[in-house]
Image 1 (cartoon, rainbow over the protein chains, first blue to last red):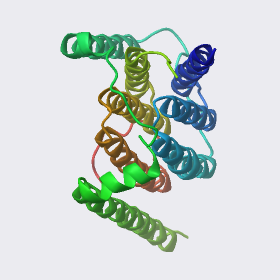
Image 2: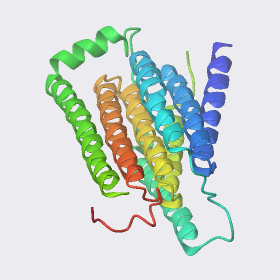
Image 3: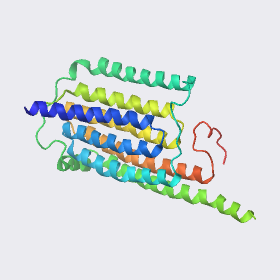
Image 4: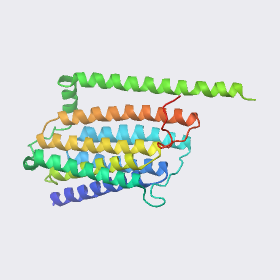
Length: 182
Length: 102
């Protein structure tokens, strides 16, 4: 019985994940695309939970679906989402090329995974109930992967400083033009 | 609790990655190209977590968390660039932004 429930949750999450991914790509309004991406991230968090990665699922909802997407929606609203219709008119060579290239990427990834790990994918390791818990993740983070942890904080700091500098520099020429104008 | 095998998660991850790649190649709007990049990163994240579950090893989840931090920084810098481009009254169209002059 529990088996059926897990399968049902998986099917719903995977389907909504792929459907909202396609929706992000095919909506013409960036605002609706960003909303669809929130659904994509939420269903991915469900898949993470099924893979017993509780801490990553919580981080996904908090950081991605929360902070990052709010920033996205804010900028989209600020810029007044200009629509561009992806499928308007006949297919151009660019669109045909894009579809062919992404299909090639899909086949390539599947072939590489099948060749390298094909036989071993059905033997899942036994895990205890603490796998993926904040306690376990925190312990690994602060022992084995301390350098990655510290570098991550530096990367975030550099990104924040870079965004501030970008914002400060882009304002200067506009003010000059305003002074030169009538 | 016996759910679907890891292969199915990897299939979803590969399809997500291809969907994101399609969006990056197909769409002309800068904002949607950035959103599609997020989908690609999430496809890679799902594969990392699936393999971490397969091997019963927490390091894959650490890697996924690092990818999330890098994705957040990428969004911050990307949105900063987009706002800077919009302030210069340029079109937010990757086909028209083909010159790299200030």
